[in-house]
Length: 442
Image (cartoon, rainbow, N blue to C red; front, side, top):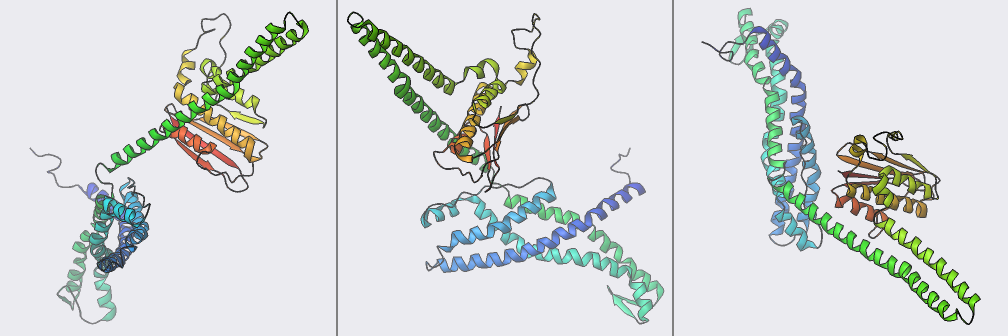
């Protein structure tokens, strides 16, 4: 009993195979030709590295080592993009940053495995890349030339020799033309060779096993430190607001009431005046306490959700704010079972409390920055994203040129986003507009 794999290929399957290979052939030839150019560039890069290494033996070339490796990275990145596009999967590698003095840079260069893999690829690639580029052109051209032997022989009317066959008659001319068949079969393997070259680049220029995990651990360590710093700064701000604001006013209330008690018998009018001042001071202290509570976690955010909290922020903004908060849900019908309780749909659209709080404070900080520095006449706040991501975008029509500085509001927004494994993107060309876009995983 025979299986499908044991049966000879049918005519339709052979035609389909030929069609696939012929369609892939031009792209594969182009890929190998560009690979030849990168191979030549790799040859020069390897020569430069050898010169620097030789000069380093006498101490002259040591300062040039980090710079030479930095200069060859565009070539390697170009090859990563080509191979990734060829294979349908991007090749991404993160280099360790070259910072500090010469000694620290050299330590980073020799410690980073990505640098050694780049050098290995150049050494392995430059000679085969040149050879394959030449063969990628030679075989398709050779197929056409061999198939046209009868035509050449007829036009030249003189004997021709090719592949050991001296063409002096039509049968010999046809026999010489038939040698194009094995050449064509070899030429049709060029897409396979191109894929092999891309796979080699992926193997050598891809990330070291476990490198992505190390990078991820480093990122999480940095974001955790930033989150702790932001938390400490928030606690200090709350303590300062309570100490300098509400606490001082409450102390003043106590003093005013004490004086009023002493003056109650001797000067009732002055005592009444002090009581009224104490009442005003107590109201101011209560207002400041509410502001502090609102800065910790706004009650409207807990009770009514992010959209309502943002609407309250927009109402207090001195600059007109346009809101795009997504589709609003209809309020429950009075007297129905849904009245006074969250519907299932409402619960579904609520994000985690930490995410909503981060989004609220991001918008608060962005509106404050725009009010202070942008000179804008109009603001727009948008909420979006899928079920697993909340996207916040704040855009103003101000003068632009906003920059992120340590300790500034934009740096605080980035810290809040990164503490939740999110990210911030700032776009603020000179002349405006300015857009702060934050993505927060849920």
